[in-house]
Amino acid sequence: MPRPEIAARLRDHGVQPTPQRLEVAEILLDRPQHLSAEQLLERLRANGSRVSKATVYNTLNLFSECGLVRELSIDPSRKFYDSTTCTHHHFFHVESGRLSDIPHEQIRIMNLPELPAGTEQESVEVLIRIRDKQ
Image 1 (cartoon, helix red, strand yellow):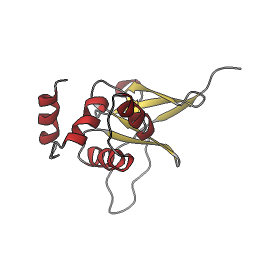
Image 2 (image 1 turned 90 degrees about the vertical axis):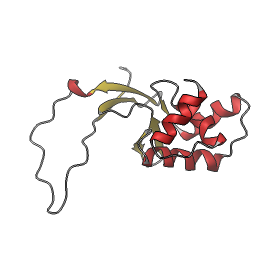
Image 3 (image 1 turned 45 degrees about the vertical axis):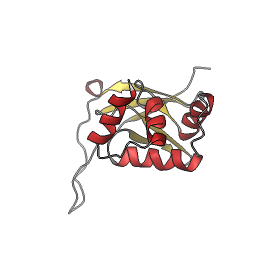
Image 4 (image 1 turned 120 degrees about the vertical axis):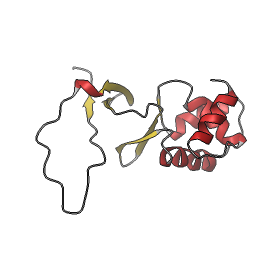
């Protein structure tokens, strides 16, 4: 996606397109993918970027808050950022650390519990952990 289109997409989500944010967005929003902050930082460095680690984390948090990406917490020590923001689910391969999408319509969830008083459902996300057969 050309930089002017990326800048417009950021603005459409209420994000000021600074040079650092554009560098992050060029990689993260390039195609449907799941990247950790560390993976994104590696790609930025490979492209010659000097964006700081703190800026990457702050930018990912901002992009997540404004709906440009979905933050996926796999476990307390692992977060990924998903460039596909429509409703869908995931397989997580525990040995490789790879995430892959499951289309929303392939999972049917029935008989959800009654929500606590004063709350409303925001989302239901399914994460299926898989591993290679022994």
